[in-house]
Length: 206
Image 1 (spheres, rainbow, N blue to C red):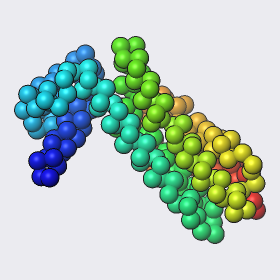
Image 2: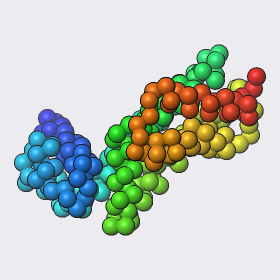
Image 3: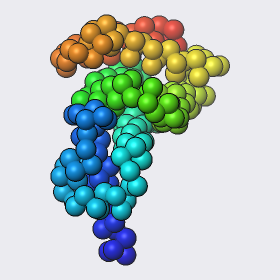
């Protein structure tokens, strides 16, 4: 059991280290020895877990995308029991999503996807499997339950989820100057507030 646990821990350290190195240097300039150093393992250990640099890149991107999806789905948890003030709960969820969407690791993930997609067209499958569509699906499920409880006026939770996410994330590209400008917490809170105010007028039962 301890041997298996140790192997899993080393694999995770390698994937985390690989993502950090690829984000820092880009795929072409990153070396396996850099990954080994970042992960705190020997270079042969990296090859024991991953056969080559391209395989390492694909697995590191997949692991980072899975982690990003898990965090975003977890951010929706308050909607399972939103309490009496649904707009306030939605605003808190929106703010958490904005923080996640603008954190350095997620920005690095997006940057790597954009820069390496021509060399690794198959990583589009990562976007399909672990991207925002999956977050929308999870959000639609929670909104459907709220609609059944009489808290939302919708027969189309998929559309409601799509519009909520568009209102929350839509302003980010312009506000952040395509990810080159870090937004302050107060600005993120303002985006969340405005998004929920608009969403509430269309969907929330008053």
